[in-house]
Length: 452
Image 1 (cartoon, rainbow, N blue to C red):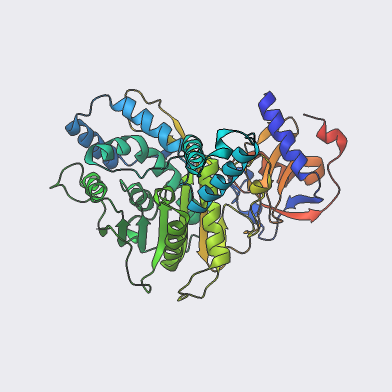
Image 2: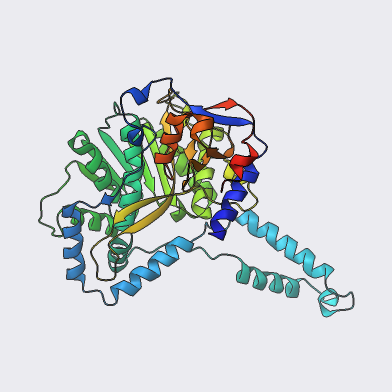
């Protein structure tokens, strides 16, 4: 409880300088058609469930493999992937080396061996030794056949849940969007194709799955065939590639990159890849990463590349617009915090049926969705709920990221904000959107602030 209270005090301090208070957005008169518990700002999925065909295929493949101590491998891989950081850039290494060299020189007495040494070899050796101990050593993952099966057992269900949640938001907010083509960059075990098919079904005619690992492409196809090379494909129209399509004119209605940006060795490769993915996007570009500071930073890099640097080969002149989760195109307010907390969300799902798994898991993820041109203009300004909602007697605590590019902590009551807005807020949860618009008003009454 103390940790939660400290966290909400932190949000309140961040928003104390703002004077904008939310009010119900009645521009579309949505409450005349739906009850408060189903207002259009609620986009979360109650439970993500893997298709039974995928579960059966994975069980068949793992039984065939007879991998020993699978549970230990899965736990170790999940811990490694969650703690993984971005590769250190060469320029950062050079700057760090220069700082260390200067530090060692300043902290070494003049008559020491370091200053009297005829050359810089001793100093250079000491700097390199310190760098090796303090710099994160990023290594590319080697997707062997056995490692692919462990990755399948560890990440297929969680990745499916996160991507399903993000695609569900597009499906709900833009019902007229019915993609026929999908490109999945870093497709891995194919969970993105399964998630997209579970939402749009046979409307999707073509899937292009791009993964540099031939063994992962083979494994993904085996899952689609029920675990057997001669099995019938559960989803038709899927094509596997090891490289992105070369033609700059080829676009896809939906482009997805899930948990793949950190597989690229440096910023230059990430920037080039993001520009290519955006060039291939005809409708929506979806990026999903771990719900960690590193995952959030990767997405913010991509955000800057698309919004600020643009594309070197502009063939589609429709502007890039942030569709979700942001209610604005300003700098992420989370980056302005001294603590640098990530913008992340959670999705509940039923994991693969292993003896060591609990019946319910939670996937914590960060995501970013871009659209070609503005989409859903009537409600694009609705604030995003960026933390668990605290429901108390006659008032609700909501932490939101709003269209003014700031984090807000609001204590919503029926007396101050109206019954409709209060009931909508009470039904919201982490990741939903408040059907609200900002208006200038005084800060909350001290008595209301003290109710907690």
